[in-house]
Length: 402
Ligand SMILES: Cc1ncc(COP(=O)(O)O)c(C=O)c1O
Image 1: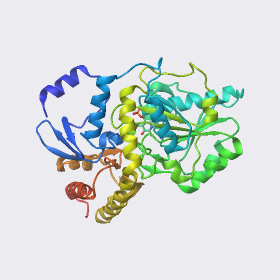
Image 2: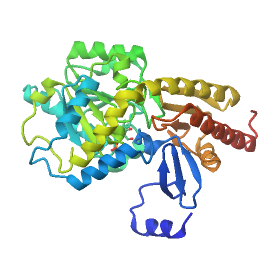
Image 3: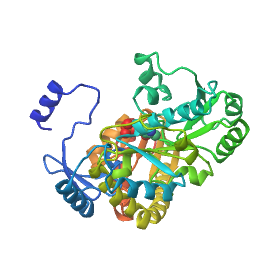
Image 4: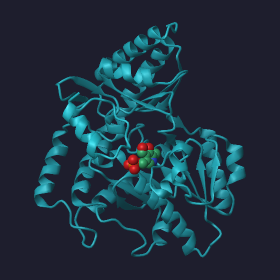
């Protein structure tokens, strides 16, 4: 790895990221290349961002054209593209309006504020509690951090938002006990991402619908990671039959141009007034133009493709599990999968990168796969061959029977 890159980064960049020591300089499709020209198959897509893969011609052309016309004009004026992106999101999600921002955490932050604003507008000052899930990750701004489970992220920044009640994921009885007429909103990821790729069970989803009907609590579905076609559905809440009042999206929305959005039902939108929330960059022309390209591809062809290759990936991952008993669980949907190991996943993560495949370690014991949505079966097979070799290398070294 180039000494200059590392030296500059470690001298001038705030050290909040533990980086894998490779320097990536370009990519094409599912392949990325480091500064020495070494090729990697990218099964991570910038943590679920690069839905269209790297170097996408249509996206590059649209961004180039838009940057010549106008990149940004602020939300003090109309521009032609926000309404078009909002309309596509409304059609995909069934929620009627969008608020645009720049990241997943901001989308969550907007959802939390809008939920509280809704109850304030209803003159219901008692409804300020939020019910959140153990294992949840919603981002690192103060509101989003307050509903993020990991104590390690939260403790140094206390005090956070008050009145958060934690419920173990998929524990319907605890959910029923936690949600009351003081609950402003329940927030959940239909599939927890950073928490180790843990889908919500159908039984738990049914319980969410039931407590929502009983108490009137709002539901915020955080689809920043699992939404926008990643599971083969526009949103995973739809697969579960959940009826969120607010949905946060980010990551894949503009295929790598930073963009997030809070999608809301009409009743929530009606509770908001001018000035209640805002952002300088949110929904600027460049991000919207990229989002139009991305949403059109997701809607036209990618979701069907994800269903097909996702089923293939699941079969291959289960075959990998039967070969390597260190893999104790295989969880996910579409092109969002986690392999839980009976050990720290760090050595497998490192070996995978040595083999030439980019994957991620999350929740200590989980290897997570979030490939670009256009990946082919052939590339998946090639990448899984490398992952298989990585498991063999590590488990043989550790003296674990294979
Ligand atoms: C479910 C979920 N919500 C929110 C976030 C925060 O998004 P961002 O990192 O864009 O702020 C993430 C990021 O991983 C996420 O997975």
